Amino acid sequence: MKKCLRLCFLVLLAGCAQTESTESPMPAGRSQVDYDRASYECEREVRMAFPRARGGDAAMRSLYVQCMNGRGYAVTVMPWW
Image (cartoon, rainbow, N blue to C red; front, side, top):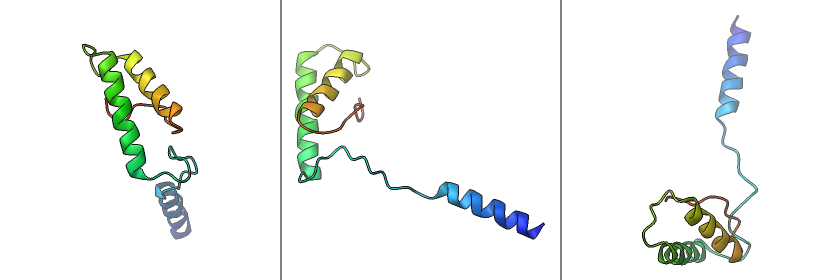
């Protein structure tokens, strides 16, 4: 019984382990500051293109992702809006 409980505990513990993602939105040689600047600029451009749209608009999301991908960042979703 003790062996079974230990095994269950180890399996549960392993499930909680964090894994490091090999996929990063930032290309090599770029910093977090570069990413933040590009994200801000893309958000600004999208909001200027759609001044009346709400944050959930699919067109805004699509344009943001395209803008970030065009700048070399592997972005698939908008971060917050």
